[in-house]
Image (cartoon, rainbow, N blue to C red; front, side, top):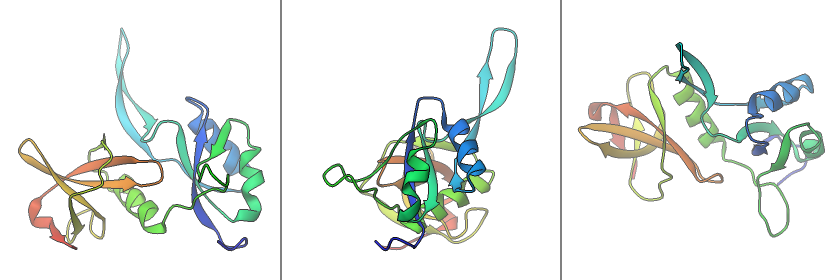
Length: 169
C-alpha cells in the first residue's frame, strides 16, 4: 500500500458510539461512512422509527496511511481493523463499499445477514439496485441479494426479483 493514496478502512468503535465517532471524524474533515438502517423502536407507550448502525460497532473511513493516527486518536475509536500479525490496517476493496452505499441509498428493505463465502455471484441488471454485485440466496419464497464486507465477516441482504439479476460466475 502506498502511504499517500486513500483507502477504505473499517473502524471498530466502542459499543453504541458509532454515530458519535462519525460526528467526531467529520469535525476533523475525515471522510467517513456509517451505514444506517431504520428500525422500529418499541417503547412502552409508543413506537417510532430510529436509525441504527447496519454493522453495530463499525464504521468506514476513506483515508491515506499518513492519516491513520488522526483516526486512532479520535474519542470512541477502539482500533482500525486489520491484520493481527503486523498490526497494520487492512484496506477494504472499493467495490465492497460501493455495493454497500448502493444498497443503503436504494430505499429497499435491507436486513443483516449471516456472512456467506459460497453461493451464486450475481449482478443486478435493472431496478433500484442496478450495478450491485453480490450473492443470490433464497429465503422462504423470495430471493435476496447478499453483499459482504469480507474483512469484517459481516453481510447484509435485500429482497430482489429473480428477473433483475444475471450470473457473473
